[in-house]
Image (cartoon, rainbow, N blue to C red; front, side, top):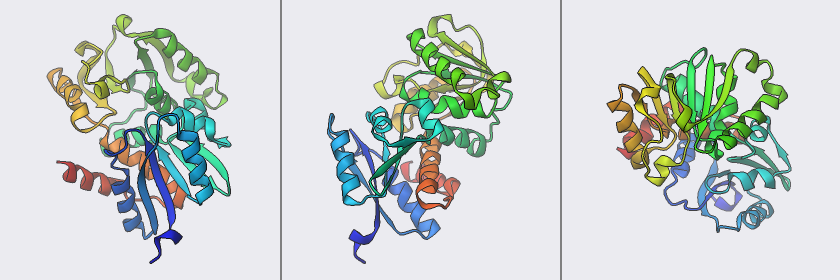
Length: 284
């Protein structure tokens, strides 16, 4: 078969060699009977726009975007979904006849992993989200959409958390949700409550830094979730166990956000739970 005739997709980032996305999408394609080509593409810092333009011109059908280009991906798009607009960042691009459509599947990937794979319902629960950067921005809207009782966003710089909260409070799509969910912004030092679910969206794991909060924020048996996976999440997972919580890394989020992107591109929902099980076994 001439692979030049295949629909082509890419994951763009820097660094990118660690990405599991080609393996995930290859399994999705095999299990759904789709024919496509998916590759990593190391993108030069400062070169995202030029790389994207080349992909559009070459006839590529879509791409995933990882650090540090999610904000640039949002700005480069001709149109954006509501969830991308809320995040002001995009991790999934649909390329169609020269136009670029941006979406953000990180939040729905996180919610699906917690509720479907981990079996923890978020409705009516008390949630703590750590980090108001790109990762936190990408998941805040979908977390609110499942209507927790309370969601507290904390960040080292409180003004950043307050700005992200304000953007979500002002968005029309969340007005009815926020009548039932209390949404607050705080700084790390003023945090004095405990939570059913604690989600680390900060850069602490990626940077190899200490967990930025005290163990007292965890209710007994709470779910402690790090959006990183593998060795980067090890310190957070240990901290969670030592403080009586159930730890979970972000590998399931990776697979579930990819499943959402695949469905957007191909119009078919892949068996994400099966691929997550296979990927965990492979990485172990």
